[in-house]
Length: 163
Image (cartoon, rainbow, N blue to C red; front, top):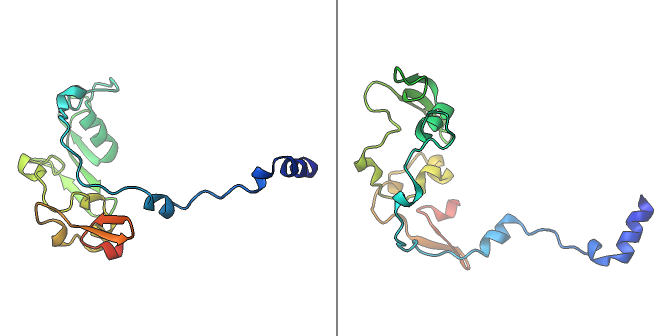
């Protein structure tokens, strides 16, 4: 085996001189940071009915996801354990329990709640959660400004120094 390796290194010197793969930070620094995406004429209807039963199990996608992710679920009678009307979700970032029952479930947002202001990335931002969900991330229609954190690398964040 050693002889085979030695022969490979002598006959194919590029194998021994191969560069290691770049670090993630190096690769990320090469990505271009651009503004918001242009309006392209996207229409939801192009992609079929929302919440379709894509796996053909009798439940639409919404209920498949809720059945997968919630604990202590309650279902609408007569739906064979399909239509979720209440349950408990543990926020993976904060560990906070989000419960629902009775009236409108917490995971169903009204149209007014869907019109978000502030930073659009806050729900998946570890800095936002680590700082205790600061108000600055939730207010203002424009969201945070674009700040250059290193040459050629900018982020849209109220706390760029913590990234």
